[in-house]
Each structure stands twice: as C-alpha cells, then as structure tokens.
Length: 384
Ligand SMILES: Nc1ncnc2c1ncn2[C@@H]1O[C@H](COP(=O)(O)OP(=O)(O)OP(=O)(O)O)[C@@H](O)[C@H]1O
Ligand SMILES: [Mg+2]
Image 1 (cartoon, rainbow, N blue to C red):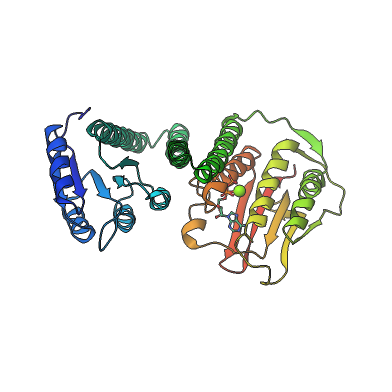
Image 2 (image 1 turned 45 degrees about the vertical axis):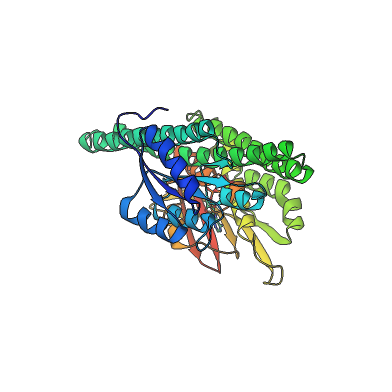
C-alpha cells in the first residue's frame, strides 16, 4: 500500500484480544504506527489524546459500541477516516454507520488483503484531501497577495469556493453510492431480496442526484451569455405559477400570485429570471417539509412590484412563506457556500445559481427570515 512520505497512525479498537494482536502485526508490518484500545471508551480517550489519521473499529462492542464511537469521532474530527469491522448479521448496524459517514467496511473473518486495500484507500483519500487543502491555502494566500487586482482575485475566490463546495457535494454522493453498492453486494451474497430492493432504491436516489448535479453544474458554468428580451415582468412569474400550482396543491400549500398592475417592459433573459424565481418558490415550498399538517395554513405568495430607489426604477420579485424560517448558521452562509439542509434531496446550488443570474442582470437579492415564522426572499432587477 502507498504510504506516501509520512507515517500514518491507525487506532484499532476491538474487544477481542486475538484480533487486536493479528491486525497490529499486519498493520505495523505494512508501515503504520498502530495504537490499540480494547473498548469504545478507551478508544475515544486515545483518539482525543493522539488524533490518529485512521480508526478501525469493531461495530459491536460492550459499552460504547462502534457506531457511537464513529459518531463521536466524526463530531470531533469530520475528516478522520473510520473503517468498521462487521460480523455476519450486522447489516442493520452497518447501514446505520453509513449515515455517520463510515469510510469502509471489512468483514470478519478479516482477510489481510481486504484490510490492506481498505486502509490503502483511506490513505489515498487523506493525502488527496491534504493536497486539496494545501492547494486551497496556496490559493488563498495568492489572492491575499494580489489584493489590488480586485477583479482577478474575486474570480479566483469564487472558483476556490466553488471547488470547495462542490467537493463536499460530490463526497456526499460518493458516500451514498458506496453505501448502496455495499447493501447490493450484501443482498447478492446472501440472496436477500430486501437488501437488494433497499440497495437499489438508494442507488436510484443517488443516480438522480448526480444527474441533477451535472445539470446544475452546466447551468452554473454557463458563462454569462444572457439572451435579453423585452418582456412584461409578470411573464416569468406567471410561468412559475402555472408550473408549480399542481405541486402546491399536492403539498397543501395556498400558493398565490400578485402580478404588477402597471404596464411595464424590462430587458431580461426570460428563462434565467424564470429559473431564479422558480428556485425561490421551490425553496419556499420546501420550507414546510417536516411540519405536520396541523400547524396551520401553509402560504406562499409571489409578488411582482416596482420600486424607485436613487432615481432608478427596479422590478421586484418577492417570495414570502410562513414555513420554517432559517437558523442563523444557515442564513449566514446562504450565498457563500453550497449549503443545503435537505440531505440527499438538495444540492445547495439553487441559491448560488439564482444569485449568479441576478448578478448578471446587475440586480440584487436579499432575504429576511425568522426561525419558526417564515422567510421573504426578494430579487430586484433594474427596470431601465
Ligand atoms: N424559504 C426558505 N425557508 C427556509 N429555508 C430556506 C429557504 N430558502 C432557502 N432555505 C435554506 O437554504 C438552503 C439552500 O437553498 P438552495 O436553494 O441553495 O439549495 P437547496 O434548496 O437545499 O437544494 P436545491 O435548490 O439544489 O434543490 C436550503 O437547504 C434551506 O436550508
Ligand atoms: Mg433550492
């Protein structure tokens, strides 16, 4: 296995002394520094003290079990690679550990080749992450240096953030695909139809996600080749209304539109503005997810308005919901990162793309939100 140019430390947690001894010999022989712990409690203490690069833990142990240990470790250090040792019949636990981002599984009885492959992959991921990080650090200092060339550095920051945000999204999808193929493999091996169905469902979800991601990426990467048209600003809003009314009904949402009354024309890329408004409205719909139907009437209002500011005319699209609102931790990052709170259902591209569209129209986007009360997102476009 490829140890690169430094010695990696592995913490091995297992309550069976025999397994500890054998794995200790194999891993030490392969060039690793090995730390041992006989149970989850002591494993956690050693982890805190020594910060190993990789943890290999038995999934079933008395006291703190492997899952709990995995959770604690990921909370302390999300980048640590944790490999789970599973026995026959630990399928449910194995699936659960996927949710907490276990890196891999090795099954008992442990085959030393399987062990070396798994640890080798973990080492590769660590060194790739380290390279990305040093690249990003380098990029940041480069940007700081060239602070005076503001235009250039701004685009580098954007690229840096895009790469960082994307690698997170892709890592999530890769984790999901790995999990589903693990379940499928178990299903095939054990001729278990339930695992096959479960694995396939997960796999389909991840395929959808990667398809959406590539479409999002294409949209996001499209350099600003706006195709402006003179249109009535109500048109994109009414298109969104027409397309999303059935979805609103299905989700028990009262979705209403207040179009602009005065006759006005603006120069915009109609499809782009439609996409921007569409993103805001679907986010507003999603803000009710997880709320029981008994929590009152769900409302989403889409309003088209005009505003005079500093002698200029602006067209406003305002999307108001009385859904869940946002935590400060989320709202602070909205336009800076690909942030999503929707697990595998969201990518966090929606608002980034929306903002890009609005920037390209020399407009602005803002929002107000109150946790538990709802949010208002406003887009302004110069009306010329
Ligand atoms: N109206 C809203 N109410 C509550 N939270 C919101 C609202 N709009 C956005 N958010 C929060 O901002 C996050 C980012 O939104 P964004 O549209 O960028 O991505 P997403 O909706 O999660 O995924 P995607 O749009 O790619 O499907 C959401 O996950 C959600 O947490
Ligand atoms: Mg969205």
